[in-house]
Length: 390
Image (cartoon, rainbow, N blue to C red):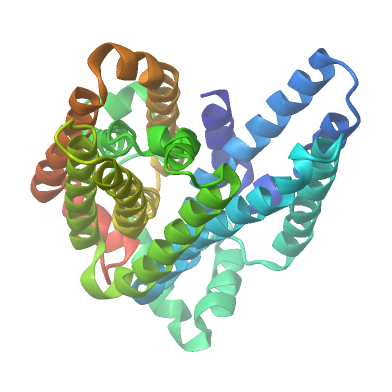
C-alpha cells in the first residue's frame, strides 16, 4: 500500500518517466546489490522492502503512461505489451532460479541479474516521450505540442491539442482530495475500478499462482517444469489478448475471461469430488488450473490496469489508480494468507465454488457497470462517464 501512495506522489508531482529514470531506478539497482551481498536477515529484509516499494510503482505507472501516450485505435494493443513483458519477466526469473536447488549461493546471482533490466529501463526511458497530459496539466503548452509531434506527427498536433481541454469539466487540477473520490461525481469510476480489482483477486488467481507447484507435484510433474508451463500458458493468453484488445474490446474480453475462469474452477470442484478415478482427478486438476490461468490472461489479467487508466479523468487519475491498486494488493495479501487455512477448514470443493461464484459476480458486474473504451479518446471516455458539474 505504501508503494501505491508513493506511485501517486511520483505521477502527480514528478511525472511518469521519473519513476523509471536514472534519478529513480538506481535505488532499485543498489538494493538488489544489497540483497545479493547481504549476510544478515535484517539486511536482506531491508533490501527486499525497498525493492518491493520500487517495483510497486511499476504496474500502475506503466498502465497510466501507455494510456496517455498511445493513439486511441491502438491503445489496447500497446497496453497489452505491459502484461506480455510481465509474463516474459516471470518466465525469465523462473529459468534463472532453476539452478538454485543445486548451486549454493545461486540466489545471490539472481539478485545481481535482476539489477540489469532495471538499469536498462532507467537508461532507455530517457529516450521515451513524456506524457502530453501531464505536461499540459503543469502548464507546459509548448512542450505538450512537441511531445504530440513526436507521438502523432505534425499533422495531428492541432487536433490532439484541441481535444485535451475538453476534459476540463469544472474541477480544479490540484484540488481533488482523496475523500472526494468516495462520493459525488467521481465515486462511480472509482467504485468500478476498485471493485474490478477486488473481484480479480477474489477469483483466486494468485492462490493458483502461489500454490500451483503443489498441484503439479501431485500429478508427478516437477515443480520447476510445472511453473514454466504456467508461465507459457500465461504468455500465450496475453499475446492472444493483445491481438483482440482493439478488435473485440475490453468489455467482451473481461466477460468471457471471467466466464472461462468460473468454468475452470468448476473443473477444480469436479477434481475434488471422490467419485472420479485417480487419473481423472489429476487431468481435471492440472487441466483446470492451466485453463484458469489461460482464461485469466485473456482478459481479467491485462484489461483492468489498462481500463482504469482509461476511465479515470486526468485530474484524479493518479490518486484513483493509487486507491484501486491499494485495494488490489490488500485483497491479494489476504487471499494468499488465508488460502491454505480456508482450504483445510472448508475443503477444496467449497473454496473453489466460492472462487467460481466471485467470477460469476464479476461477469454480472462488468455487464452492468463497465463501459467499452475501444477506439475512444481519453477525453471522450471521461465526458461519457462523468456527469456535468452542477
